Image (cartoon, rainbow, N blue to C red; front, side, top):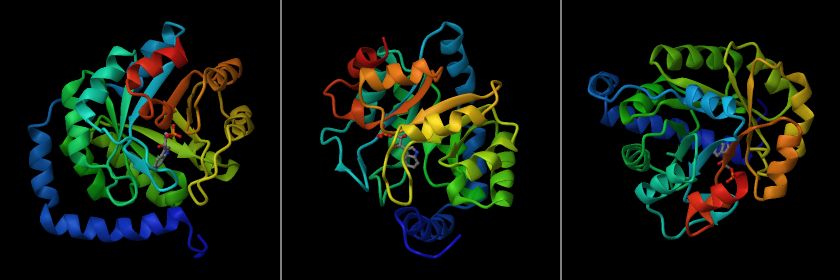
Length: 265
Ligand SMILES: O=P(O)(O)OC[C@@H](O)[C@@H](O)c1c[nH]c2ccccc12
């Protein structure tokens, strides 16, 4: 990885410090004890597959207060209310940002959202260390995100294995062909194509269309980021992409679940 500063590299530098701070406050042993009393995992991939089997779009609906490129997206931010609205609107799964410094997220939001609904939840964060995986399951996460752009091959394989051993599903996220090739070496079912470049935060739906032909039909492709309109959804479904990760478009609506229903039904 070159060393020119980009948004992603800044986030990862800070993330290392954050993990060091956290592991001084709560030991892995402490987190492992919390896992013992945590409720069982809810099948994240299974919930997506159920929607797809009914010819419906499978929507991973994101609980997102702010982002580095957009600033605060939602002023009135109540994860409990949002999670309930998403479930009512027909979401397959929830995604909760837990990064505090760049996305104003928190572990508490994940716990609140998961308690308020019956849906499986992905911990959306920049995962670079085993510690975060144990922490993810301890707070209730059913799935974790692995961003290929943030990891080398060894880290990717090792974090993936540990997450699976902890019983969680994994969404492997890519943005270009080289990252996709690394992802396809894993046996995972879920491949996320992030339409947003995490170095520059530029977004283009063409990212999905460019990478799609290189992915075998056994996989479930999740188109992530920048999906805002009914037309965006139509174009995606026209390419046989039926699984989506959407944040901002829902978060800007007073009732996020109603917006979900409008866009996807
Ligand atoms: O708000 P949007 O444009 O609908 O995007 C949601 C989600 O895809 C985005 O939050 C995201 C995708 N991958 C990430 C990795 C880290 C942080 C955030 C993300």
